[in-house]
Length: 112
Length: 264
Image (cartoon, rainbow over all chains, first blue to last red; front, side, top):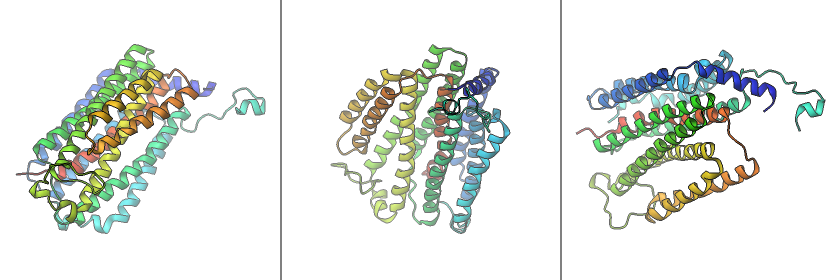
């Protein structure tokens, strides 16, 4: 690696040194608890639409925790955060728009 | 040839736009593109799920418990991975190797449990036409016609979870190379032999095991062409890949398993 690359890697390593182990254990615990909540919800005979909303909501929270803390995106420069997240969200929105008329039918057809 | 040699200016580069090193940016770009692959597969599964009547709900409580343990394995592997990255930036080589091996162990546990889940489903009659028939096994009555009436289930389920299983397998191999370097190649070849010989000829894993052989050849060539000691940035980049695999499962687990749980 050239000098700048080495300096950047060292800066990233320096940022990591400030993280306590405890934070990672808390995030791991939260992810496990949310997984347990998801499994319990499955057996509550809820409306499928409502259950899907809650499960997806929890999945997005779990994804945010993994990306933010485990993948360290929270500690990257804002340019990197915005470009990566906006690009992937934009593509997923495009997919949703493409599938929207049929995807919307879940409310009417139901999930058995 | 480096720019500095061409322009005769020692190490003059513009600072990175994203304030980090290029390997990490490269991995992030790869993961963004890979997320769209999984996004498309998840959409395909959901589309089939919504628009098809008589969608099977094959995941009884045993399957859900199995999938929950698989999820716990992946979440724990993410914790051990982040601890490996932490050990590497502290210069703790032994800790880094141990945490990487712990991550690989959790990943291997996930693959074994997932393989067991697949084998049970195939034995019950939920299969793909391309899979060999299990000799002496009759499909369970509730799934006898599923492969014919709702072929979308098998096609989307096995593609989505198979793609994820392939990613986990490649992730374990990636971490093995970072942790053990050349020592890992004979281990990988041994694993290939065990997986190939231990699985019956009618199992898709009998053929799937060859992924390990291909990986051993590719990794051998890479390590032969560019032998190096992997530093903390390499461990962090490998960690990004591993966490991504975990992240994708956070969507597959509820959408595929929990939404198709068999509730008696």
